[in-house]
Length: 312
Image (cartoon, rainbow, N blue to C red; front, side, top):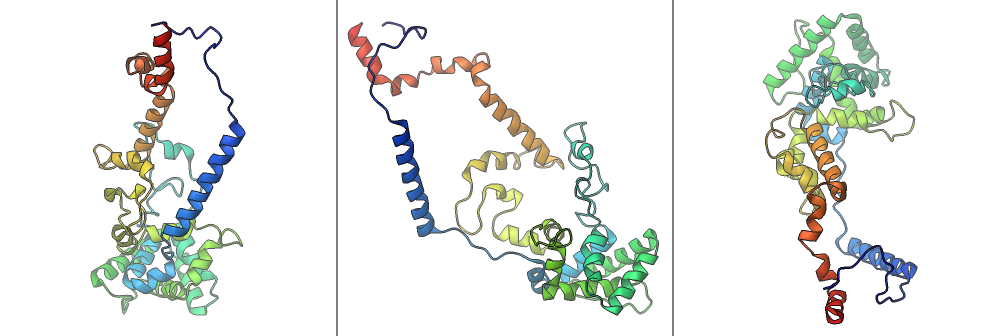
């Protein structure tokens, strides 16, 4: 059989091909299918989870988290970059990537999630509690908030704890006021507009929600969105999710990624390397010869090869 010389001008059969017509037909077909399937199957429309819905559905969990925000002991308070300097953040081996990037979205959980929103109420009792909090030193503030968080946790379902000996300082007032603000829906608005007059930045309410002890994680588990449930590729309800994300989800299920505090950056780095390797296949030794050793192209061009064999 003759071997085709790529350097020579093609002398085989040809046929006209209207690329614009082909692209237009393909676009129209895909568009009609997308619109039709969307109309037929729709998509999951879960009601948005808000601080208001959280405070109404799980008040004890909300006040415990609010007290923890004052103490700075929540996930957001201890996260590190890009929110604060409480930890080094994600790192790749000895390279502290998050710390290198620095604090880009400064968040002080006590000020941003509790004190500033409460300051918008202009309530005399609340303002007095805020003033007392700010007048105390950091050690005293931490003691008040930590003790109150512990007391709420022990009480389990309690929304407030009596403070006969002034052990908790202004914390009960602050937490109770924030709880009332959340129930009314005002806290959602205060946090989304704290950096802009338009309610378009949901960073702060999302961080606050993510700090919840059981409510938000419970919703994720119920919808199969947790990390150990391959959550990154799942959709809410019984709808199919983004199946192309299975390879990302896979690594979170196995060690060392599964048990690592740096799983996110490790998985992203590994996928970056794999993707780069795929792009560079034509230039990698051995791999670039796979098409010759596994000649799938001969199946696609079988008619041409059949005619070549007849003519040879």
